[in-house]
Image 1 (cartoon, rainbow, N blue to C red):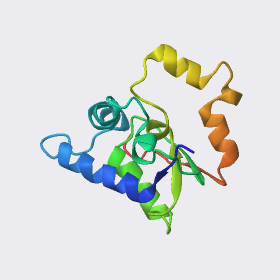
Image 2: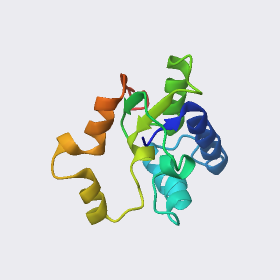
Image 3: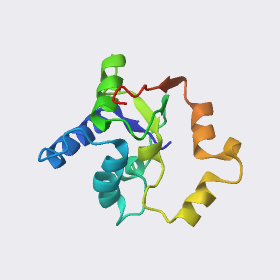
Image 4: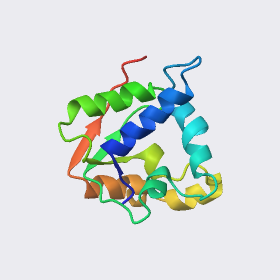
Length: 137
């Protein structure tokens, strides 16, 4: 239930465009997590998806991708692929998992087995599995 809508993802992309307009206009997912998502989530210590949707959203689409890719290209790729992008609910690791947690707490969340991790649970619950290719590198 740690989903983010396409509309929310697009709103994040607009924030990213504003933040990075003076210099790096093509930030990676790593940069967006470090410079946008973590500062927004630090005080509440929740994931970006939970920050936006405290009651949770049931995910329909699991998305896997590379963190070295352009964040804006990633969002653009999803928006161009799905006709219902704005209302579709995505499970994306950088939004679903709490990025500000200490490593030991995050390891507890991820669990001792990959089969019991949030990734595996989301894959089982989503109807669609999407791999977004990295067109930057």
